[in-house]
Image (cartoon, rainbow over all chains, first blue to last red; front, side):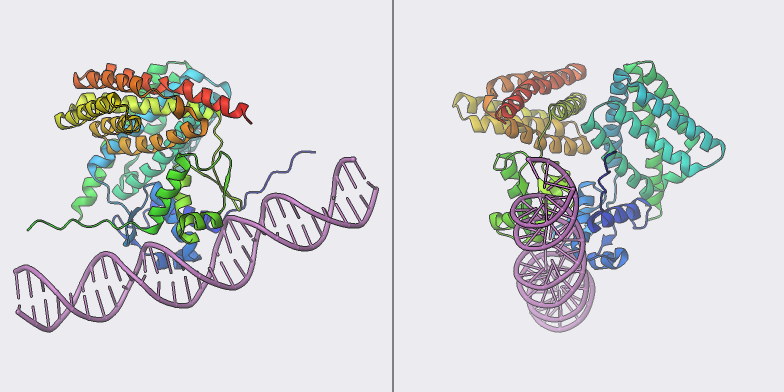
Length: 225
Length: 225
DNA sequence: AATCACGGTATGGTATACAATATACCGATA
DNA sequence: TATCGGTATATTGTATACCATACCGTGATT
């Protein structure tokens, strides 16, 4: 008999964490806004205990900032922070692409290719949210193809935080999923033909490509006070 | 009149976090051991709430592992995890060294040199703990000299976790602070003369140098069941 | 104008109660 | 004997009440 899958039961803390994270990443809160525990308990519908634990986790994700005896607030990113962040992510996505090219796991390659093709189909049908989701998945799959779990974990964290920068700077509105998809295809090609250096270089450039957009968005937001 | 320094008051949660972290990193708990909340409240002398918040933070540091409705336990590292981890850290320390060489901040360089000289003096006086502390500080200073705060943060986290691997594998006992210091001097020389590629390469090799020691320690621990 | 005192508000922390669940133990049954 | 099932116990997960304390705005006082 097949083994029974152990059912993972979500704790309220985990639900609260994901709920708050999604609220933050969709721009529900404004940059700099204080998150009052008691408001959050009403918003999420749970008690203070799981809210506080969820906030501690979000603090580690750098999606909120803890200030002693003041509470938690949404960060207000600076241009330098964003530049530093993109530089770091660029290096690590480059490493992931290079390692993936080195490994060349056939199964993973097929998965990535399928994600790209599905994204292309979604693009043709103008299902933009689908395309964006699959574009994110591309990076996930490449990280997994690197075979390095630590790298995968760190990149996952960075990718979560990059969404914060995007939403706080409204730059998500100006993305061009088609161009992104095109670059992903180039990176995949380099990985598939085991060109480590080329894969790294393309992946790094790909990340840095979106930096100006985010910085411009940040300026626009700040100009509006 | 000089401005009053805003006094940073530690919350109990933060104290509990540091206390637990230090206990973990000094090997007070065994790999795989469950951390019972009730025991921890007695051990640290605070109530469950701050203990649980501290554990959530430690979970993000990957110094403990949370299992739903089971609690938290000390991780049992595998050889692959350790290899992946060192590979990642090697890449990032290399990046930090390269960026530091690029920046060439004179003030930072002086700080690093001073740390190296102090470490040398401590070594001559056989103050081994001093030397180890200053050797860690070297990496911190190089990361700061890179000018990239995000990189600095991530490397800090990685450096914390590497201590867990060391203590869980007892490999700390076999370290040779003198050899480490010698390698640090070489890395510093490369940074000081703005040799980005050489600084990166030396820093990466330096990290990977200690990997076999940790892996050997892991095997030795596992052989003892 | 600068400083100080005061009070409101929110967090930080404790204690407690209870629900939910994992585990160990134990006995019944095949 | 081995397996199944049930029960007791321990522990985490969650809610809640309560208090102490820090922060901040406000207004009086100098």
